[in-house]
Amino acid sequence: DNALDLVRDVDVVIDGSDNFDTKFLANDAAMAALKPLVHGGILRYTAQLLTVIPGVTGCLRCLFEGPPPPGSVPSCAEAGVLGGIAGLAGALMGSEAVRLLSGERGAHAGRFLVYEGRPARARSIVVRRRPLCPACGHLADPTAVPVAVSEPPLPVEPGAIDAAAEVPASGASVDQAPVQLGGPTDDDRGAA
Image (cartoon, rainbow, N blue to C red; front, side, top):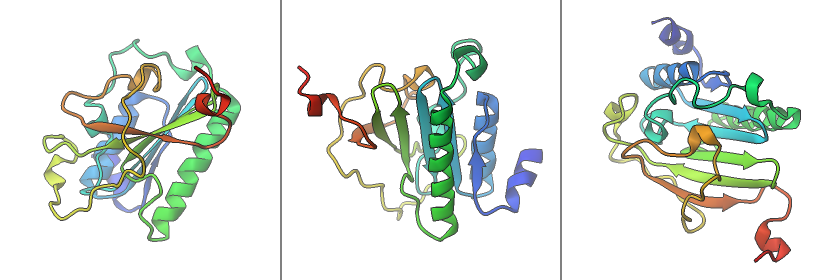
């Protein structure tokens, strides 16, 4: 009840929490209050962003049914975090929040953006709504326009997403499209 009270009077929920239980609580409260959610996370060299529009896009529970088992993913204190990655995640989250507050949809609405700092590679995974999602399934809007994918979907590569995001929830539907945020890709370098 306390989480719902906290988000009820805001225009956008921004979640940069450092534990999975809080991330899912923020997601559930935002969906219950019909508030857009900007979720961000970091670990080691990886930053993640998900912008959720209740009733229109998939939410965190559409992508992952729930938190991973305790101890299966190291904490930031255990694994470490590159400071620049934290700054990138914060800048992405802040930019999305400003877009939403300005009445725009959000550049990453309905997409799970994963930026990997070591290879300077980013992937954008379309998060489809799950009709039976316990957080947002009841918000089904049959007139909602699906999030467009600007490039053909690619298969999810093993290791393309950090350990917290390796396997989508049962029944989740994801498509993956590359996003170039900077730096050469293997294709640019002519790698075999």
